[in-house]
Length: 262
Ligand code: ADP
Ligand code: MG
Image (cartoon, rainbow, N blue to C red; front, side, top):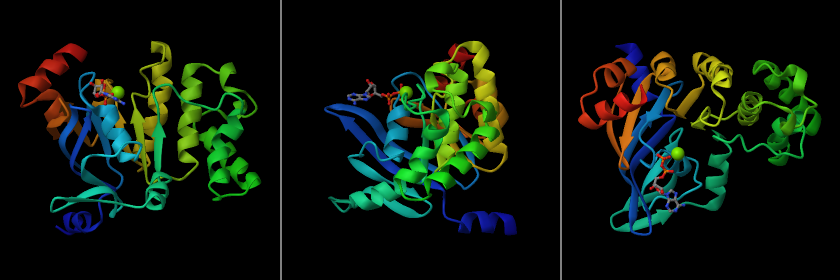
């Protein structure tokens, strides 16, 4: 079908190929392969210590894999195996790639000494993409989108955790990234604040932003994910549409994990 051909021809938004990562003698990622198409929403599930955060850090080049590579929009960055030799790519290529990947952390990581507006406006100015007035205009628009148009002058400490995380999402959007990675974005929140953050992520998902989300929110995964990937022991154990992985898991380890979090 035409649609399929078109999809197959477009470069993957993200491709992870045979990624291995060790910390000392501890193997944390053990040959991970993953392809994410433009506009796709991928939810990564897995027990604590299974390598989910490490995988996101490898995608964002905060960690280097010992073997394997990561490619974003068809551009290879990272480390690749060439026979037995590993070729490292330039620091500059890595930085350029990183500026196209948004990262939202569990603990928000906002700049405490900057207002909400400047938290969002800072990166486009620092990277020379926008002037300060342009960045502030964009920041106002993005803060409106996450429902915080009234809070532009506040400091992070004056906001609830849910509001801080929404600022962090606006900040990630300010660099107009091709893909946004979320590492347990609601795990640090009081239960009554989880919904407002998931609603913002859902809005991004339905507007066609490419997202990779590590979360234990199974209901949310079922609702927004195009694909669910279950990781255990640094390996992808199974992946597929949410209805398959969540409701008809093929592997015992997936069933065992789901019985504990559901
Ligand atoms: P998850 O996010 O799935 O809970 P992580 O990717 O954080 O898992 O961690 C995977 C494993 O790697 C854990 O055993 C953790 O202790 C270990 N690990 C993570 N980061 C480091 C590090 N910087 N140095 C040594 N070990 C680490
Ligand atoms: Mg983690």
